[in-house]
Length: 134
Image (cartoon, rainbow, N blue to C red; front, side, top):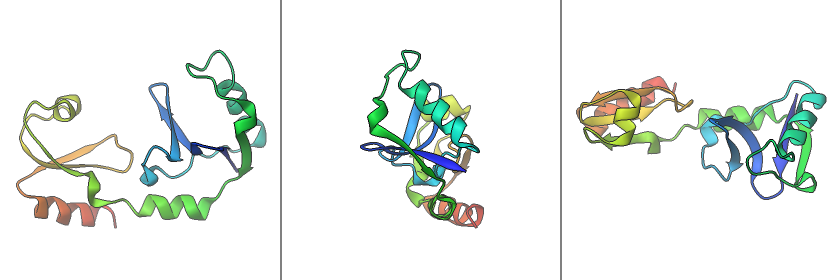
């Protein structure tokens, strides 16, 4: 297994809707590191990142391939922070995007794909969050 590191952005974590995420630049340690099963796949991704196909091409000299640090990635993923608990007000972009319309306290799961809530208080959200992240 391999991971890709950019000398300024950090370790590649993955992408969503054409946007790449890097640790620590993206401030999403709960995502862990992106992993490439083979050196060839990591190299192909670097080739893409440096090509005109990439919306913001990077410089090849700023990227390198290294062994996947599974222990560090899993440690980051397991340290999901409470900072994801948010008070969301009816009609805000986050609630509309997630299909929620009730005001209250919510939290995103570590994939940032599922929004949980609403909860009537921050304490209730923290209790469920603590259970969820065990």
